[in-house]
Length: 217
Image 1 (cartoon, one colour):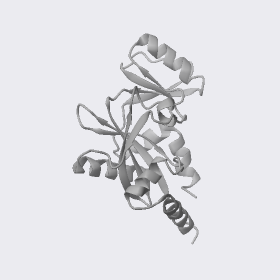
Image 2 (cartoon, one colour):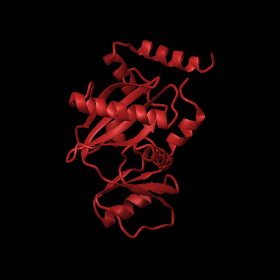
Image 3 (cartoon, helix red, strand yellow):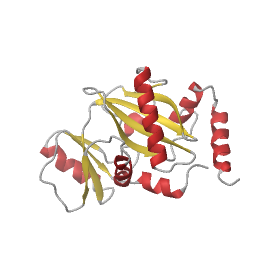
Image 4 (cartoon, helix red, strand yellow):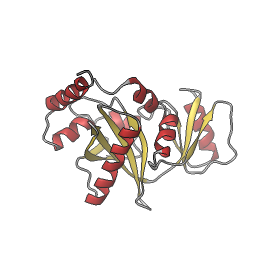
């Protein structure tokens, strides 16, 4: 089930994702890609350093100064030879599923401490997930329409989940990335969105199967 290899391959690379989405007018944090052995003269602190094709925030660091930046690069390059350095955006973390081209309810993700790193993602009780997100109807619509644009631009034909930050200062919504194979346990984010739409876990799975089979009819 799920989308095809092309959209999955593009989405697996944060650099390729950014090239596609920015060209389609989707706001994303400013940044550059960096290969091992290359250096940049100017680093916009605070920033985020992350492996280009990693997942679950593994190898990702929040950086405030030159010393932290050097350590962040060393960590990220342990996982691959290609990393992204992006402007840090202080804001609310939002995520939206898109199924069959239509956005699902928005979830706000609120870590109890720190940021949404590997530990906060997978250790029970460390993060609050609120569905629907307690944001205005206007902001809900904005992020849902952006999620649909992300899905369409990446040629996703069944379902995906797009992750966003809403800047506390400006209210601007930035896309971080898209996941073409998001978690699908009963407590995962897509099933939570499904419950808000009145679908239980089995019905969410059946909908994914139905959309996937339509490609072959």
